[in-house]
Length: 75
Image (cartoon, rainbow, N blue to C red):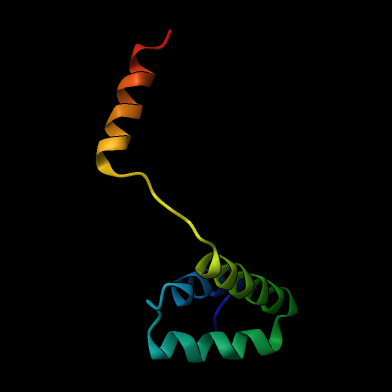
């Protein structure tokens, strides 16, 4: 039987599509029993959905280097 700490790890792995079939099955059984983990899983799924929909942009490598240099020169 999976404990809550393991369930949280598998829930996070599932978010990135890294969980194995066996981990998914174990998690499903754990979520049937543990309401706290079921709530965590539901909120985690909601967060993933919102992040996927968000129009996020990352800095380019060049922009990161410029920012890093400017931070080094500031007092």
